[in-house]
Amino acid sequence: MRYFSLETYSALFQQKNFQFWGLQFLGWAGWVSLFFIRDVYWGQPFERIFLLVVDAAAGFLLTTGLRYFYRSIWDKPVYVRIIGILAGSYLVAAIWQPTKNVAQFVYYGDFRAVEEYGYLAYFNGLFGYSYFLILGWSGLYFGMKFYRLLQDEQQRSIIAESMAHEAQLRMLRYQLNPHFLFNTLNAISTLILEQNTKVANEMVSKLSNFLRYSLDKDPMQKVDLDHEISTMKLYLEIEQVRFEDRLKVEINVSDEASKALVPSLILQPLVENSIKYAIAARIDGGTITINAKKYAGDLLLEVLDDGPGLDIKPGEVPTFNGVGIENTRERLAELYGDKHRCKFTPALPHGLKIEIRIPYERL
Image (cartoon, rainbow, N blue to C red; front, side):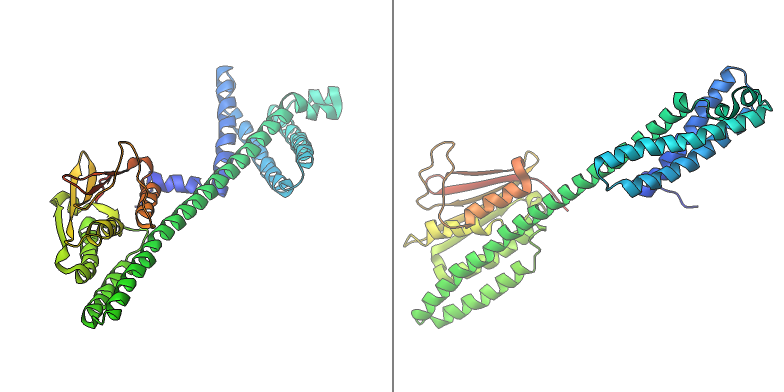
């Protein structure tokens, strides 16, 4: 036997046709139930429920036809729709009320009202009850219609916002490769001019491996920190060819942190910044330290160097040349909003510490 989950029923109810037919059936079934309770209270015979069912069936068919009429005038000007609602409701009520009255006369076998009032007896209750009931049905129909339009518009807005968000992330992520590629090719060009072809060839080979690895990763997907560190090591191998012993790297990643999800290539611009200001600018080079750990339910990433550092005042956000650091800030803002922190502070005894704190996530 096949069972339907709550999610299945919820998805089914979201379908427009199912919404109409479900509410149409429940509405008229509720009408029968309400008047049946009234009849029981006043001591009417049980058999009167069949009369109610006939009346409800007639109302069900007539309002279903009214639905198709309303659909035909949906795109018309507002005044046409208003006139259509008033006229359509009156026409349906003018058919439904005589149907109910005839059924009642036949059920009781009593036609005295017809003998006394003539054909007007068939329309008794038209304005006092039926017309306003059908107008109420019409109001509910258009209310549901506008609600559905509002839902569709909100859905389109969410999709459009999501697409814009995704496009922004892709743009920010893809900026990294040309930025890094330009710097590396410039270094290779310098090596060639210096006729240091062996080192230049090594850099080209390592650059190829790094770009292949980074381009294989979907910029919209997060990777675990182990993969990010592996990518970082490919990048550092390229820089190691340039700086040799002048570049020293220390990596300290806890076991918990190594399984955390991070945006791909989130560390590369930070390390590149340290290489530019703390390694390349100093004859004796320096050390870059990468730390990662789980802290208070978040992932804490740190990139430190022992270079000259920056003159950073408390609460001040430093500015950097180039796109790397600003790109990282924007990516973090797009991905995490106010649930992240990117902080720049002096490292001890000297240098710069970049601290990133993001929600801890795992596959």
